[in-house]
Image 1 (cartoon, helix red, strand yellow):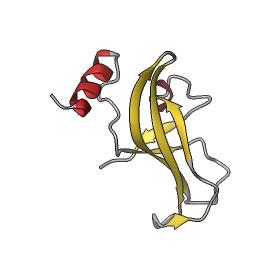
Image 2 (cartoon, rainbow, N blue to C red):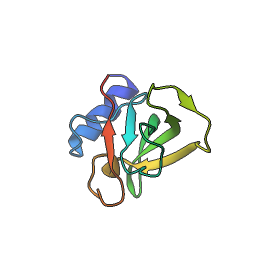
Image 3 (tube, helix red, strand yellow):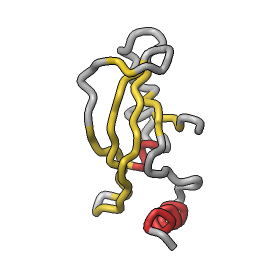
Length: 99
């Protein structure tokens, strides 16, 4: 079993089914300040279980209505996996980008 498969199995066991995956994109639907048609997208670069629970290291970017990258102050960060799944939708409002 690969490390990615082990992480996926652990996330499923923790109740995240289907689990998030490294390389997957999620749209931040709470980014309402963006111009019409623009989206804030986070891409998962790493997953890990910490003392505060499962965390996703992400790279955030902004795209326009055509999907082209927009120059912005985006960068790297960490998001709780629970928040990706909307357990606190008043704070975090993410949705998977279909593959």
